[in-house]
Amino acid sequence: QSVLTQPPSASGTPGQRVTISCSGDSSNIGRNTVNWYQQLPGTAPKLLIYSNDQRPSGVPDRFSGSKSGTSASLAISGLQSEDEADYYCAAWDDRLNGPVFGGGTKLTVL
Amino acid sequence: EVQLVESGGGLVQPGRSLRLSCAASGFTFDDYAMHWVRQAPGKGLEWVSGISWNSGSTGYADSVKGRFTISRDNAKNSQYLQMKSLRAEDTALYYCAKATSVSVWEPFDYWGQGTLVTVSS
Image 1 (cartoon, each protein chain N blue to C red):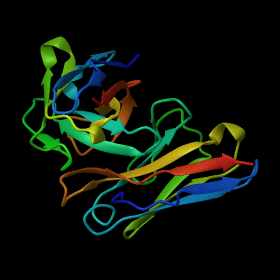
Image 2 (image 1 turned 135 degrees about the horizontal axis):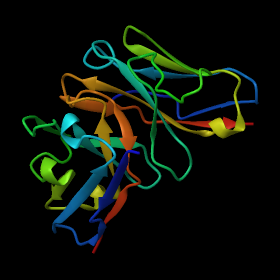
Image 3 (image 1 turned 30 degrees about the vertical axis):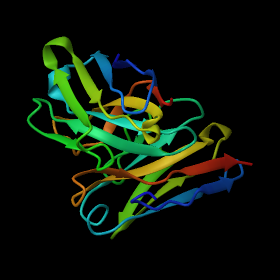
Image 4 (image 1 turned 90 degrees about the vertical axis):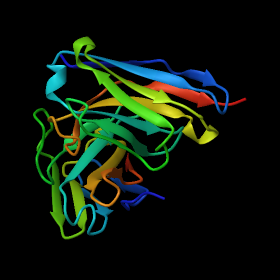
């Protein structure tokens, strides 16, 4: 059971906009910023979004993040086949004194 | 180019010990906190442990507290994870991850390819 809650799966067709939610509580998302990681099949995770809505250099602006209260969302617009991957949210947890991850969302591009 | 190369994984019997290493290059190692994150086969990501730039602050997941010890040697641009009293549920791919600053609470911007630890009799 992960501390942060994500839907196990999401899907969309090429060109569509897809959102992935991440729910936490006052000890993690409610107090700290949210980061998102993308894990392509068979590869190591990659930082996709940090500090709720910031993109590292090289990440396309099709990817965006937002946070409100104890929840966060990752949006992917103009969906492409290469976006098919697992996506994880993460945030520091003040009660556990460490970062916590969501269970991951498997995105399928139909 | 930032590179993180893990080593030390393998097959180990329950109750035994194993030491993982992570060799870093391409950045000033002692300017950044470092972490270990694991992923059990077919499962999600789980943070294991983190260490600040000067080893002054360390943290552990409850699942490994008292059994695992994180350390780093800035002179060797390396970090380590000493794992004792290993259990079947410790079986996972262990990733070395670099934080974006000296602080352990910052996100991970680079990851290694992982080293597989299998705990089985």
